[in-house]
Length: 286
Ligand SMILES: [Fe+2]
Image 1 (cartoon, rainbow, N blue to C red):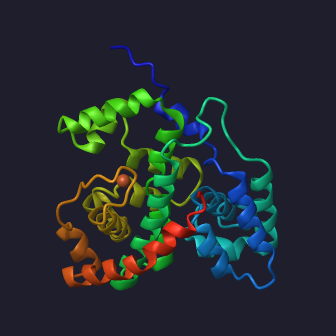
Image 2: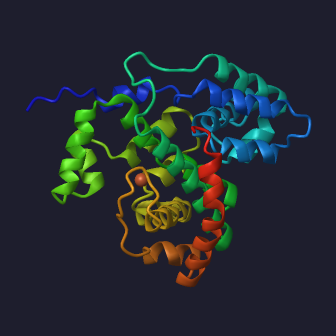
């Protein structure tokens, strides 16, 4: 059968941003106007909006600030860029929402993808906090962007490709293997390619590339492990883009790397559950 799907590498190069809903950008821009708003407040708001967080992180990693390819954490990016410039960027995003002509107006799975991204940022941050091996802000940022490969697949590819993916998985083909059969690359690899294409730090790219196989992540094994355990927690709670359960047990390598016990995991789940209602309620795509 001849493939009619667009070339995945061309798609990556066409994805200069993630689509922002103008009304969401507007709410974030308004938040920057309050004289009481702190950098921490703004980071908390941005953590609910991956496309805007991405714009801020990319700006901080642009040559303008002399830190190109070095800013790995959203909090660091907000402080570096400063409130005045952030206000300008966020207001522009509210006015000119980016969307390529050929892509869908908004990912059809938008709500579940946003919930997964914000939940994974929270869960990965809690794992890092308990572990102490990885910086919490870094784990939150990596968790927020870990699934951007799925965003892009959702934006650019026809429903038929997703039907084929579901059919392959039902036949027992592992999820990432099924993605590779259709698009040549898994969502993890696509996410890493995007991070590099956008000029963001390579440690984020590596951690995202191996977020389903942390033992292959080399120097970034701890960061990849924090994302993996974050996904494991979400999976065990039935939260995710598809709601499917793909993890049976916590990967012992991730537990050992992060010096986390199964009792710690139970406590992290309890902490996460205290926050999850707020996450759902605050989700800026309602
Ligand atoms: Fe994933």
